[in-house]
Image (cartoon, rainbow, N blue to C red; front, side, top):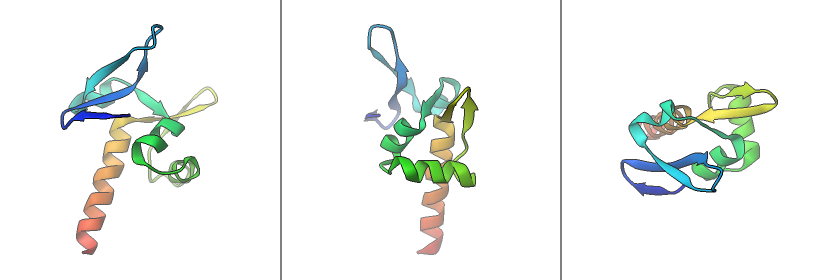
Length: 90
């Protein structure tokens, strides 16, 4: 995922043509979810770290068939919680 500016993100919504659509950050939860590997790329952590965060419930996720997905809102909430935790511990 590449940040386009402070209000837009490219999310995992590839079309049959291979194009990716920009989605407003404030409405990201309404537009979908990403795989654990895409979530790891977005947060800049390893796949095993994402799996551990999902397993412990620190990062909300859900299953669709055999896949585990993470909403963009869950990623944003996790980031906000980490920022708050960081700020409070300083």
